[in-house]
Length: 220
Image 1 (cartoon, rainbow, N blue to C red):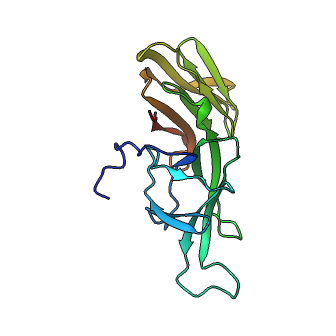
Image 2: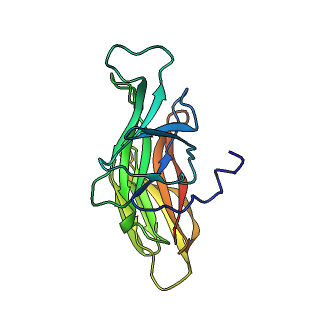
Image 3: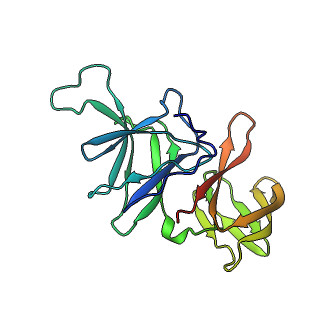
């Protein structure tokens, strides 16, 4: 608990493992959260900017985030509420689970889980996820990456170098004006020791597209 979760690297994983990040935290959800795998529980600190420590993927591939009930449950009911449930396919050994808040379901779920296979997400790569209802475009050097609403894409970094400078630009399509508008433009450095995620979301307060970055270190 004494470490800075925004900068500390996750511990090395053994066997099949999943890492968690969230796009935003619903009001009232405790952090650290309680993870349930099979019959075992553990606490896990979640960050918006850095992947969590690894969670061992159980045989059935199901990892739940739960909240223990303060009152006694109904007869035969579990003593907890399931806030999120991720199902990791058997062919994925290293998974990234992106927790996206949703309107509470009748069952009590507060997050949708998007599972990303880390086998195709290597050092220096960028993973882009568009959670808005607008078309977004990313320019990485000479490569143009279109992102339809709800879609994602991975930019594979050039291999054979430790660090690469890359101009980057984010844009969205304004349906009313029928034109593309620049959200941000800068230069980034692609490092082989880490993977980067950029998530586009809608800022309700300012009624505009927002984005934030997440770092996933590469385990040796």
